[in-house]
Length: 317
Image: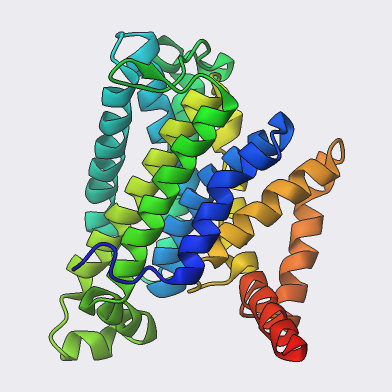
């Protein structure tokens, strides 16, 4: 599988534009929002692998996000581990937990799988909220240092912008290669019918487990970067509501659409900032929004915007 085989000219131009954006418009608030967008997009991308491509419902994304964040926070603040090693350990530990959890629960299907992952998310939230000796309970962990690699610190918004964008680009390219390979075709067949896929000789449980581990490794990486960026983490950041919010990112952006994950994450970040002090209306607003999207543009915002752009070019020609 050639890593850069499926990169198109449009994607290259888009990547170059994103890299030059903070240099052309050096606004710290905009850069801050974009960093959050890239981190949330990593979460959404992993869930899109499960939900959009594989048809597997997961409501415990916040827990794996939290495992990555707390691992990096504890390793750097309590044990003095360098941030780059802490990042690698966070991804590895999150993937390991996903493997252990996925072995039994991925034999479930549909709503039973959703309830199992939801239960794991609640267990994690209670654990970090109650174990004061390890996680400081509701107080959380503060003083998390900036991310650094071999002594080079990403201690400004601009540097962290490029770090998070680079990690996201790697995940996008890797995911695109997977979905264009035989693994992607097998995963899509499982989403249509697990029984039919099994009769064709596909090891359904093994493939589901592999994709689940990969998706949660994405979440672990996102959680680690989130901890280094925010520098303070606590249980309220990893509630069931946040898992539901990640599901909304996938649905709003477009299930089974690679760049829909980015569109959904950007939309959620912008709406969150727009609502501002009206945080109590989040649930109602997103509920109404998802109903409208499923009725009017069930393929997601990214596909709709893409069609509008293509139509504009056609009219211009």
